Amino acid sequence: MKGINYRSYRHVEKLINFNDTSLRNYCEDKLKSCDEIIKFIKKKITKKNKNWDGKICEIGSGNGKLLYRLELDRLLSKGIGFEISRSRYQFSKEFSKLIDSKKIKIFNKDFLKSKLKKNTFDLIIGVDIIFNLISANSNSQQLQFLNLCRKYLKKNGVLLLEVMSYKNEIKLLKKKNSFTRTFYFRKSDPYKNVKAKYRLIDQNIYIKKIFSHRNGSNSFFSNLVKPIDYNFWSKLQEWNIEISKEWSSIIKSKENEYMVILRKK
Ligand SMILES: C[S@@+](CC[C@H](N)C(=O)[O-])C[C@H]1O[C@@H](n2cnc3c(N)ncnc32)[C@H](O)[C@@H]1O
Image (tube, rainbow, N blue to C red):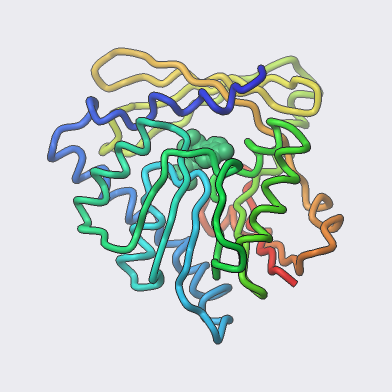
């Protein structure tokens, strides 16, 4: 299992699976999929910060959609992203050309090895289970992640994390060894669906996914996630914490995602 989350996404969003038209449609869909989080960031973060200067960092930025959307919506003056998957990083460079991005630089690098200036960012973002992934790697990585974010943020700067409690999954896994769920993708995605098999390994959940490509081929993916419940956050003294439990209903998700706004004291 060691290092599994460093390998999981290495073939995701390979450019070979796209042509010019499908790439454009896919990127348009991805930008649109950021509507709710953009509303959330405006309401909870930018409008509340009188000194907002638009310096944003995203950890596990994937194809870069959120950073690009923030640039298009003029919420960002300078953005940087960290993404360990080479294929996703390469995809993000094509995405950047499509929107003619001028303000964003994405690094194909482990955030935990980053060396940035302290007190730099107004906002650091970790959406879609990045905190569950890093926490599953080890407790020391989890702590290092939070310490680095605190160091890089300005005073009153915000670390915004989208986290999964995996409450329902744990309940099911206490009754049976494993279970499988199928998720379907939008038409613009080269993949039709993914079958995900869940298993409990110690305190973490091991998820093995089989992706069905529209051309009939399959590809495999697995990762390890640590469930993080609401109580976890009350232990953190150096931050002011706000939890948005209604997030999964806002994004119409059947899973137990929630948002955590951590403000640097
Ligand atoms: C669940 S995906 C989310 C991607 C993107 N934020 C989104 O919403 O589509 C998590 C991403 O984090 C990346 N990742 C995992 N650990 C990382 C690390 N230590 N540094 C940088 N990226 C990391 C993975 O390669 C993966 O692309």
